[in-house]
Length: 476
Image 1 (cartoon, rainbow, N blue to C red):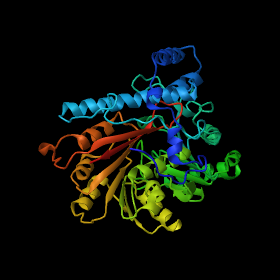
Image 2: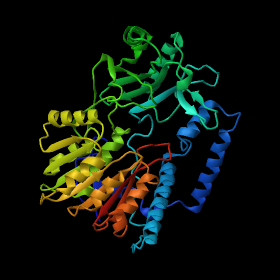
Image 3: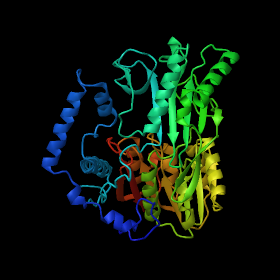
């Protein structure tokens, strides 16, 4: 299938999309040669050696979080291509075991394009989560990223100033937060049952220059008056104290007695500034709430969404079903080329953002629904009588799609084209792929015609890490 359309490319790639993809190395040339593979194994052993006692904590953290940081970028892309190739080989094998006759291309279940590089290689993250724990010097009020595991009881919190994927603004806010909690008489909350209060810090930034900080706090037995005092001190520090250097657009505070809390479970309390920050993607303006999903690499997301738009082959009479739509970025970026957008998302605040984004950008042909996809999608598709072509895009979390969502898609005859965007295709998404493409299975209530893998395009949304975003086109 040729990618022949010319779309409006992001400001970083002002060229036809087909020409951009064609400029990438060919599939055969992207395969790891024996020499390259040997070189990669040697460097991997070298990295593992750096994780042994005697190496710096900075090296250990870099090796744990960004294990490819020592490799030239083109070699990183080669490593990732090989991992995606193995994933498609696994999918082909799984489907063959279930009786699917695969027309394999080079041992794969479908053609695999080269890895699309990230427009920005360093400091690309627009969201970072920092923990509070004991540092290498034993100080329990250290703000950084973890090295070690809870199971091994060897966790150390290391400052992230040197990390290639984290922008300086994020580490600046983390450093200021550390300064604040070290001056606070309250202890950090390292283990819930041991008490303490100060916990995680989340920093979000945008290309518009906005910065949001979210401080997580365990209230333990503190009364309301004491909580008000702590919030006032935190605000004072970041607004007119040493933390003012961060220039925060928004400062949020969340009282959390669990590892993670949604806004519905424990509201995000705005202490200072604007309730939202704003980002621009493909000429559209999007607002972002504290817990709303937004692709962590904005420049990479622009390229990703354009390819999704072209692969969808959505025309003016098409209805686009955007499953796990977040703040509506994918659907809204494609609204100009389709008849209607229907988005579904479990995070209520994200849906509020999506509706605002649509209204602000003057996009009227869309509707967004808040709720669990496994509840809403079967209801929507069971009564689907619209004669217009229906194309689905699914962009779930690492947990993949719920089985009831997969079954609803599989059994809906109107969906002939599905674009599955996975940030962890070797995980639960593999189960989804198999269920969507396997022969009909009455025991699992998979009665619909199976999809077939047609094309796979990996996107490097996470330079220096081993992770890749895989877009798998499924058709029937």
